[in-house]
Image (cartoon, rainbow, N blue to C red; front, side, top):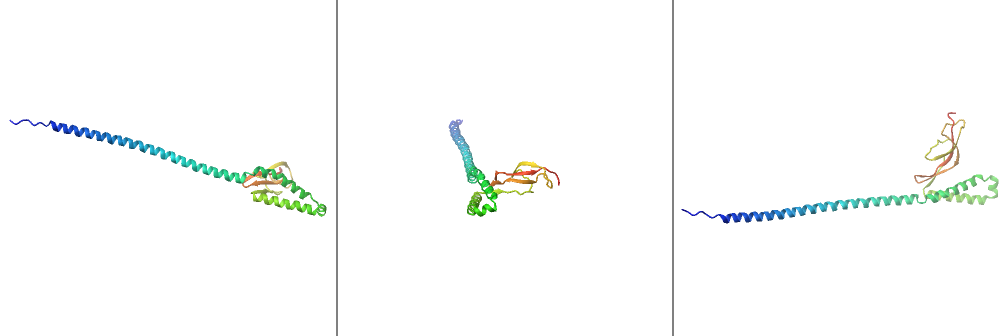
Length: 187
């Protein structure tokens, strides 16, 4: 009879292949795990970078806005302090009679030139005069009602007297025009 074949060596080869395959699978699993960790870290760093970039852009926009506001409105306190100078010069010019103009002509001419220069400086820096007229409608955004009085031939809310002109600094109200307003209904 024939001797049975000894196939034990084949079992050893199969076991060796399984061990090698298991080692390869373990290496692949370790590499895949490391790759997944690296991808997660990359995504986290990318997210942080994008947030930092957005923060930098927002900071740039804020600083540009702050710079523009400082440029346009930084002198508002000085401008507000100059308004009484304008009011006093205007009152002085309006109070001068023809007789005083003959006697003090050059002096009044100097005051008029100074007033013109003041208005040029106001214009250069974005200060505009709000000069309502008698009969205009009262606008609470531009005017301050100093008093109300019933005046015949007027409607409620009509300006009946202008006490002082107002001023705008670019698009902001520096001082409202001070006016008297009619409280009369119909005329």
